[in-house]
Amino acid sequence: MLATVLHSPATSFPMPPTMIDGGELAALDRIGAVVALRRDQALFREGDAARHCFKVLTGALRGCRLLADGRRHIGEFLLPGDFIGLELDDAYRFTAEAVSDATLMRYSRPAVDRLAQQRPRLARCLLDRICGDLFAAQSQMLLLGRKNAVERLASFLLAMADRSGTGDRLSLPMTRNDIADHLGLTTETVSRIFGQLKSQGVIRMQASSEVLLKNRGGLETLADAA
Amino acid sequence: MLATVLHSPATSFPMPPTMIDGGELAALDRIGAVVALRRDQALFREGDAARHCFKVLTGALRGCRLLADGRRHIGEFLLPGDFIGLELDDAYRFTAEAVSDATLMRYSRPAVDRLAQQRPRLARCLLDRICGDLFAAQSQMLLLGRKNAVERLASFLLAMADRSGTGDRLSLPMTRNDIADHLGLTTETVSRIFGQLKSQGVIRMQASSEVLLKNRGGLETLADAA
DNA sequence: CGCGCGCTTGACTAACTTCAAAGATGGTGG
DNA sequence: CCACCATCTTTGAAGTTAGTCAAGCGCGCG
Image 1 (cartoon, chains in turn green, red, yellow, blue):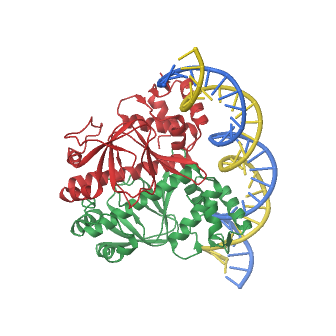
Image 2: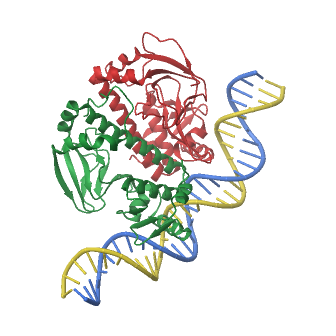
Image 3: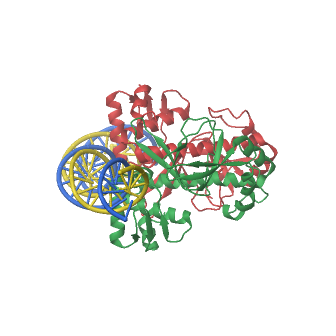
């Protein structure tokens, strides 16, 4: 899919996605259908034939992979505006499940291919999304390979705050266990580090899913600013 | 850039095992120049302006990122046939250094863009490489987030064997420390697990860089077959 | 031959996990 | 509207894996 995706404008440096998203991605919506999921429902499972890709409209999903004995890793959380499955092979390579009730736009892959062929700027836009996913994965590898528990949670909170675009106020629709499976920790450790950050005064929480960043600079230091 | 630019050859070097591109990539070589690196020399550093992308011809490189206090993570080892920097932003997002003496083909990005526009099948081929990198990164996240030391090393050895395409015989040009930084472990732990695998009889070693897989099925079980 | 670097091995430590249980939270039905 | 129950979160204590520190080994190269 996206066979023409490398057809880029003469200036090859990609622009920030937000600058060109609006018009180009709107064209996609005309070939999409809306899908609704309830909490914990699977959108697709690893290994399923990959006939569609998706864009999150509301809610949140998790992309997970399992080991044979049931250990789970969540590669990414998918929030409104995120695409799922652009990089498709012929099969989905992870399982996507709803973290909360969610709605998505569903696109057939051949239709996206055709549209991308007609619109090089759209193709470029989608390629940028894939490259963004790759960059995020590289950063997550650094986190998982070399950061301690405090650094992991601090990095996670900062990344979530940046993505939700609601300043220093941020809601976490996923459970502590989901967060643990994303950060390579356990529920208990995640909970303890939340407590630690609270008592240090860098965050405050109304509920277990509502976080306020009281000291972003402090968090950035804890995250190691890498 | 520290690398030496050599003459541009008419044809390609010893090709990698994966010739599945059906000659599309050969077209690239006509717009490339050969670059040679010596062991530990940097091809580029994180943050450098990204004017080129590369293909490894001989030798091996590591793609690394650092934390502020010097902790290092190697996101990937780059072997003959691998591309580096296709997913370019305007700056390199990791540092690439030679693990051993190496030669690469260097391509200017605008030239690659132009060629990809003329050749959709080449564009597709390059996109597939990027998607392959993304899949590898997702697998590595699972490894770093949820596998123990034995599973990590077993997975690594199997992946390296698959990539080098030399059956069960495999050479590791990188140091134990490089392997540790790739697997989120320490030199000592990597060394201990090598010893363990040797005494279990699943591998044999002539030298510390020459590994023979004596029992691939056993290794796959140890790696968790995920 | 000897030096330097990388690899190995051992003893001890620290960070995180595991196991266990108590404390919130929120959704449901009476 | 409240009570109940399942689920999620928090907290505590003990256990385990891998890390740290330290020393010795071995190979390759000048």
